[in-house]
Amino acid sequence: MRNYIFIIYKKKFILIYYILLIYNNKMSYKDSTQLDTRISESNRILSKYPDRIPIIVEYDKTKINMKKQKFLVPKSASLSYLLVSIRNQINMANNNDNKVNNMSYFLFCDKKLVIPSSIINELYWDHIKNKEKVGNLDKFLYLYLSTENTFGSN
Image (cartoon, rainbow, N blue to C red; front, side):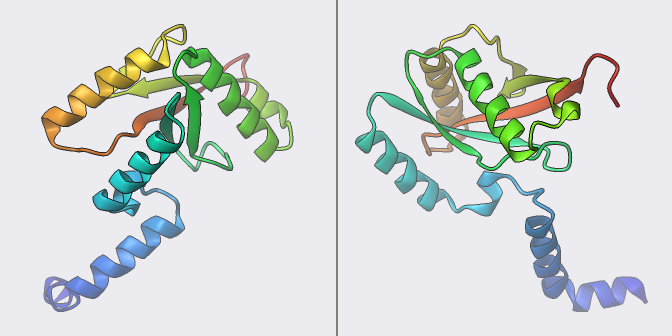
């Protein structure tokens, strides 16, 4: 009987599931925004700011509270520059909570840990080459932020 109800209400169930994912903030930027919108937005940003790289930082919203997800970073900057900006965003969103201050932050690109001393421009072009192979044509650099508790915090 449950399978029968699921088949009848399949379209409504998918819509409700989609709304719940958005409500719980578990959808990535790629899932919540259409490809043509992402392409036009990235092209607009790159034409307006040719010396900067548009970056989307995705994270687990149940563990991290951060106000913004999009960053414009100078091409010559290192990844540690971006990590400092991200840490400041997290501290501002959490009112300098000690639990947040005792966390280590790690960035991943294409499921690989990124070294903080690497230059963002080099990372960007490696990422774009991998995306062109897959067929994804938007020009955002997608990074995933992960956290780890340090100093014995819970």
